[in-house]
Length: 440
Image (cartoon, rainbow, N blue to C red; front, side, top):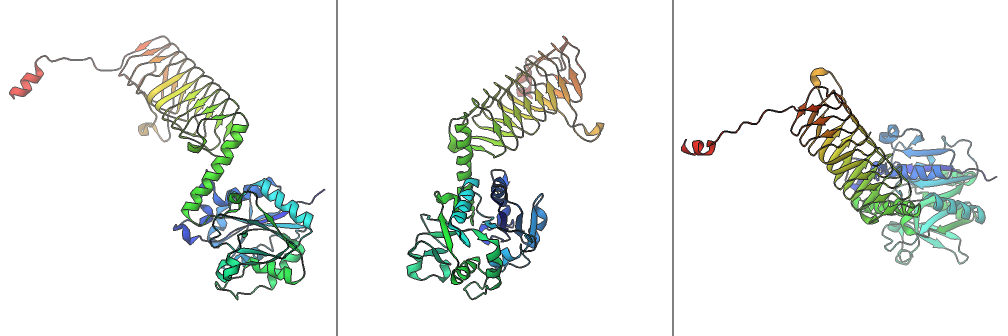
């Protein structure tokens, strides 16, 4: 049985090129912080132990994962050394991940580990060939394909800068070799830092075999240092998520305008229309149609339900089978029963709407009643209820089964089953009013 790899995620940098007060690794894309994507990839390959190296300011921002603190920003070599105590007792393979490479996939990490074991290497580099090598370190190889060195772009000669294979800053090391290599690092470089790439050089100089595995898709190995690169990484993750759903039987009409977060669950034969954003732990059942222009957050959409266009489902919304949330409708923390409809121009919050009920246009549940105490109050609307246009339901209030509510009514009292509620002023018409105003 293959031993589990240990893993370290380096996430201590501030990321000044992001032009942000938020540390680079904590910027979000598709509902997760950048570093969390990397942590999840390591978890998916069963890395154990798993340690995140962070700055002193970031140490309290992680739950459920062990952290090590890099007290001063002294480079990637020092960052890995900061995790040594947390990795005490680890043996075998040590996977070193960059916290700013959110697109890296578990499949790619598994392929990197397989290459490392097959080569019997002291270290294996994940390299790639981008369209623009920019400031990435260049991977220099010997004639037999072994890695001779990694040269940082700032320290590279013109011939070395012409090399198109670059370092992703993702590695596998043999644990029993890496600590000794780190102990010999120095700061004799333009940035005055302890480079992890120099640990690779030290292994080569010691006669150890260092290999490199070229990522088949360079996008997976790209790091994020700017807002533009953050957007490109988000687009790559969006494409991956959408493709997985489509291959599983979900119709996504326009994947380029559809954003689905990774914890969303969608059953086959659901249909997602353009300009739709689906977030959190939303679930969408078979036969449901969502969008276009819908935003859905932590909601449950039942079989055959329809959402949109231009609809906002907030957390706690549950549309049962065949229910409808239509155009310019916002629903929050509410259950809409099977076959019930909220077709247009309504806000339904903290409510239970029974089966086959129709909510007229312009309905509002007034759920905030500070004079009654803290929190929100619920509206209960029964089965087969027909409400009129421009109704306001002032919670807490209950509308019984088969009841009717007249248009324009502000309902403040319970309505019995089968009753008609009229709660509005009688119309008064004053003939000749315009002429009187003109004469005034």
